[in-house]
Image 1 (tube, one colour):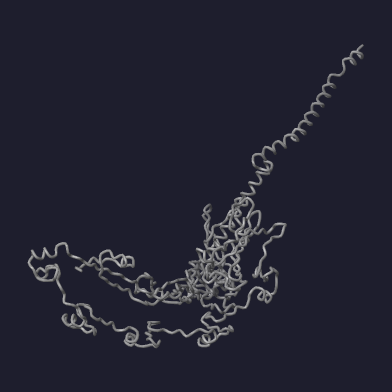
Image 2: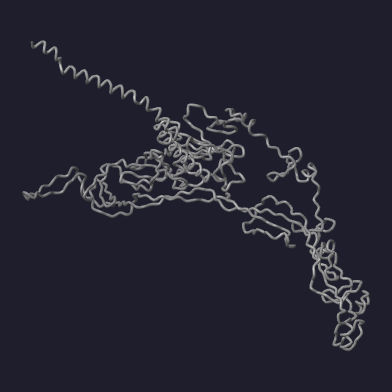
Length: 636
């Protein structure tokens, strides 16, 4: 009965367990299949919004762009700082020559501040550097940066181009986009650690100790010169202060003119280079020059400067002037002259007859004038730049000014003008004997006082004065043992048993001029004897005085470790720490302003001239040919 009922009802827990397992399997399948259908929709939604990637990928791409931008900005800052630093005297002078600065050097020169990468970490100041190399008529600047994650570099072509605002600038036309996602920056980006090779070819340059020919291959120096440096030949030209004939040989000026067919320059009726040339081209005095080239101005039949000149050009009276020059007697017509009235026939009449004869019958003629401008020769070309005094003033005038026959322009630049001795000084503490005194002392010991402390020498080696050691000795002497020569960036300090003797300076890390103090060399000496502190000169090393216990009020005396011997009076030297200054000098270049001038000239061919004419009113022929009224008129 129990068994049948049990089998009919089944086992409730077993049914429940089977249902639970089916539910778990269904949920698992749902979780596995649902993303398969949702991902394409998500991707499509993102693509429709302008991004051809998944959300995670787009986020990573944005982060990479930001990272690249920070790296590119650091490259740009190092590049700009380097270009501003490399002036004429700092650039490599010979083709293939290079100069290098680490980021640490640049920070020390105060031309850039420390750089920070995307991880907020400082860029490596030793492995990050700039290197400039001279190639032909320009330079290649390599800017290398190593930060906490990567190391890349760029190559920039720079030179002294006519569009530069500073001494050198980046060559136009060499701009590329440096990093994917970054802003456009005018630099050529060359990755260091890419798996694919770079397409940059280095031609005709010495780079990293190797010579590259015009095909970008590493060759010997002779092949490099043959490929990249053509032999310069100067033909029929003055170059570097020398004259070259038509075969390219250096010759005299006369041979140069003869070989190159240069006609002899002839100066006629002109002042040239401070000398006067006559009409035959010879150098003469100013009087002979005037006589030959400037004809005497002759006044004929004219009133000039208040005087009358006849037809021979001589100064005569007014009557002789009229007679010689055929000037008719002046006739007064229709005018009141000298208190009298003249009629239309020129006769003296009454006022009534004057009015009747002359009213409405006057005819006038008018004065016209025409001015011709001065004529000049063409300006010569600007001369080559020549050194001159910096007190020379520029000369610039108006081309319309007849006195403007010369113009002068100036150019100033910094150059090495000599050398001077520059001093460098360091102070340090040294021990020197500053005095002595007589004192009762143990006969078996020598005593000294150093910085107010009394010492006994427990060996036979005496403590001698350290300032007697010569810097060229470099050997042990007296109680002092020579240890060796050492280099110090900071001045060392003497002690009781160590002494430093200045030996010289080290300028190896300086360029033309040290911006900081150089390093100093010192010879090091140590005292070989033994020094023991004592209470006074009557005490032996290791001795003590009597002591009293507070609890027992009993005094105890300790015996001496060594015998003092008899007491004698000895000279006790006194040593003290003093401050000394050690100086060195070095010959360094002196730079200053050097001035250059360039000149151009012209000649006055014809002076300005003003002519006058009398004619009727509104003479269109005269007016159309440049004549104008003067405002004067007279009866016809």
